[in-house]
Amino acid sequence: MDKIVIEGGQRLQGEVRISGAKNAALPILCSSILTGGRCVFHNVPVLNDVRTMGRLLARLGAEVEGERSLTISAQKLTDFVAPYDLVKTMRASVLVLGPLVARHGRARVSLPGGCAIGARPIDQHLMGLEAMGAEITLSHGYVEARAKRLVGARIVCDVPTVTGTENLLMAACLAKGLTVIENAAREPEVEELARVLVKMGARIQGAGTAIVTIEGVDELQPIEHAIIPDRIEAGTFMVAAAITRGDVLVRDCLPEHLDAVTAKLRAAGAEITAEDGGLRVRAAGPLHAVDITTQPYPGFPTDMQAQFMVLAAIADGQSVITETIFENRYMHVQELARMGAEIHVDGRTSIIRGRPALEGATVMATDLRASASLILAGLVAAGETEVLRVYHLDRGYEKLERKLASLGARVRRVHVAGEQ
Ligand code: EPZ
Image (cartoon, rainbow, N blue to C red; front, side, top):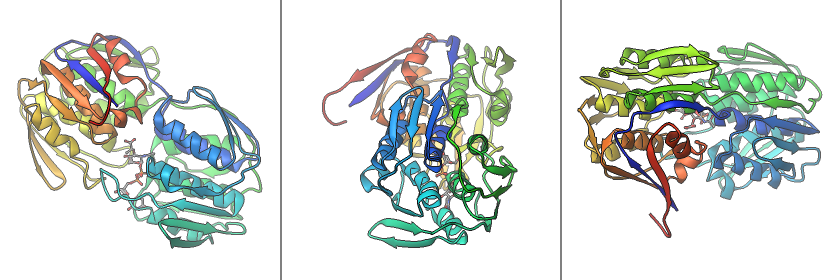
């Protein structure tokens, strides 16, 4: 098992390239199930979660080749089961449910149990498929869905769920008739999935808005497509530049996907300018406290909350962060407190009193974004920080420590034999 060791105090400088978006790649790989052909995806991030999805699709009978450019041939699927051993490692495996029912009339997917950041039920996914005529049964920890052919329906979601919208969007593409999804998620990754489906021949209107309309077709064609950049990876580097008082050009990101993050960084005192197909982040002076409330897109992303807590921990003044999406997304707080951060949590609200500096310590990663925040904290801490259990990080960041080192950070990965 690996750990990452950081020596704090370096100002980040230079430019960094952003990889493809994990949360766009995962549903897009699943959409290949909808076509009876060979899809080719480029700019695929090389991550453990993407590898897991590749293994799942192979388990269903698809041929999966490549890494950065991934070819998926889903002509002859031989199975329709997403087993517990894969789903337990990555809840996004649930994204095969909609495409399998829509194309093969049957799916058996392990229920993705609880998660470090919250209960995360999939009731909306199931409610939508049932509305489209699927017969849903739950047994022995699995959900089974069956339908000769799904039928278009009006689906009103209780919450704008990202993977829920994606599952129903994919299912509706091959349903008979018209489907309307109301209170749909508006995330750029949902819009990107719709872009891919339309390229395959789907008829979709309103993706990226709260009301999405899909007119079902009989079949979809395989395509070739390059995946959008990862806005959360880009946001993570923008925070890294600001907290180290650096000067970094974050390349290959889409500024329009980062408006909420950019606004909060500017409010904290960072200077952000669009440049060369990216964003330059400079921060010379002191950082100011900022209040943040996480919201569905286009609001402030919950996947950037932990990273911003590090900024708040060293900013002048007191910040209030409110997490509205997940009920248990403060696992990083106790670890940051070990580094001297002053954070008081009361339910979904945390009050952070900024301090001049943090202290290096040994800390434990608990989930993907929490691990990113601990790495960021190490960049601004006095002395050395060791972040354990970085397998969480590798699920969603491609070579984060190497990219940081290329910007001047003193950071390295160390392999440790045995448990941490
Ligand atoms: C997606 O998760 C992302 N994952 C998450 O990113 C991200 O944090 C989240 O959206 C919110 O932006 C992927 O895209 C693979 P939701 P998802 O369904 O789809 C409740 C990361 O760090 N809900 O939009 O699972 C749910 O409990 C990960 O990259 C229901 O109640 O999130 C939560 O409170 C972490 N019933 C809220 O909705 C449902 O059926 C939003 O969850 C579905 C969701």
